Image (cartoon, rainbow, N blue to C red; front, side, top):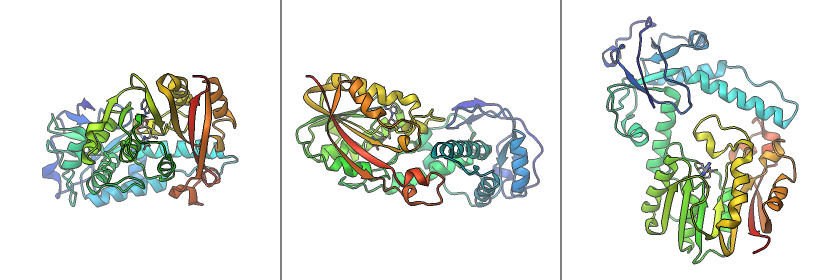
Length: 385
Ligand SMILES: C[S@@+](CC[C@H](N)C(=O)[O-])C[C@H]1O[C@@H](n2cnc3c(N)ncnc32)[C@H](O)[C@@H]1O
């Protein structure tokens, strides 16, 4: 979040439906963006009369377009801009396809993030036919301290979608009760890795560490299956708040502790479970840190520190997809060499094919790799006591 001044530019045209709700253009505003992009120094008011072609030209010139008009038209504008962006060229290898796809997603993010909207002190959106945005914004940002907040429309739409998940709840195989995920926290919609954890039999009475807990889903499954306690960590405060709230909702609050921390809590545990970010590439924003692990630093440090966090007889449970190998981002055998370097042996391993929707989508540019993807649960123990 940052504060920014705002200056005017010529509006695209009159817009009687929203002119009264538009905030004064010379006032300061609070700026929210998930990426590290600084607050815009200048906002250009636009409305429904703006065509997608003109919007694209202006965005490419570096303008931030402050939309006032109809909410559904604004959403359509995002779609139209997205369709005008160049598609990645045909790739000769999975790695080339991956890199081209990532560049295309980044360009799409940068382009669409320049269509912004303003919210009032209660986070209400003054566009015609706009939904109630107040609750979703309070959930993510807390109370507002300024009269005006400016946010990319794309991000606001993501927050509205997340608020709906949070309200409805998500059923997860093996979990009794629903999970209520928060915005910006990794959503366990892939069921393959959760089902692998469900196959672990020796859980009763165990003291567990859950490293990178996210929503807390793995902790809750283990606690419901009889684990004595969980100490969880996550580097993101949103995951900490989310897992804490869900533990309370599920009646597991007394046996679940979570801290905002890097990797391991202090002390030792009988079971150390971890579903790390699995793509060894730099994250581009805060949400990316759930998936992208630059230079495999998280994974290397997890494996290096695992033995010291295990009580005598304890084991580590590592859940990992092989997509990085299939994409050519890690050489085959890299993981096994890391186990050896860190003095760990594999007690057993169970694999399952990826069952998420992208694995079956033949039009996905990464289909070749994703259709072969497997997720494995490695049970690890120190080679010597
Ligand atoms: C793939 S998500 C897994 C979330 C959850 N355990 C699950 O299985 O659904 C990885 C999680 O690791 C967290 N994370 C990333 N780097 C971390 C670090 N250095 N220390 C602790 N947590 C980290 C992310 O914020 C994210 O919540």
